[in-house]
Length: 172
Image (tube, rainbow, N blue to C red; front, top):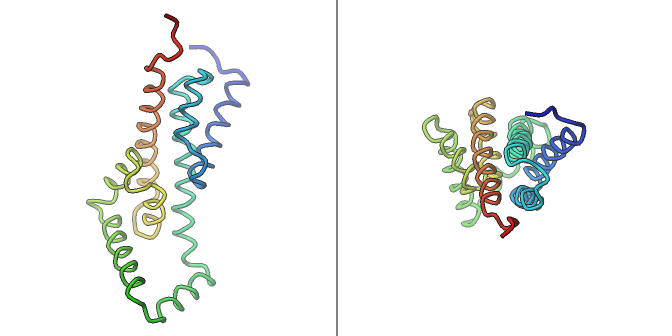
């Protein structure tokens, strides 16, 4: 194993930074980043998978924490109270019912972490939505972060090694 040079450190920091960006802004696609780095062979598969997973975890924790703390801000509390006092039409009532069911499911000790893990690995349900829902429940931040990191590392490891194993650039 060789010592990391400045270029390696900057690449790792850039990978983590892109992971944070892609966790908050879904248009910045983390899978495309991993795929591209492996096609160009610029970063080791383990380094890119772990770097992007750490960045994604940081971003999802920011979303989680934003919901957890943001719902107590005075302006948000006032807006929520005003929305609750308005009569709900049929569409809004259905959306509220679905959100309440999802909140109850993600908030359960039995199902919250497995749902989060599946979302982190497979992407169904979307991890973005799960992070927001989990922030509104009693799920512990430490457990949420650990499960997201494990799931994302697995997901991006599979992508990185899948591209690396295709051998598109190998010589005949």
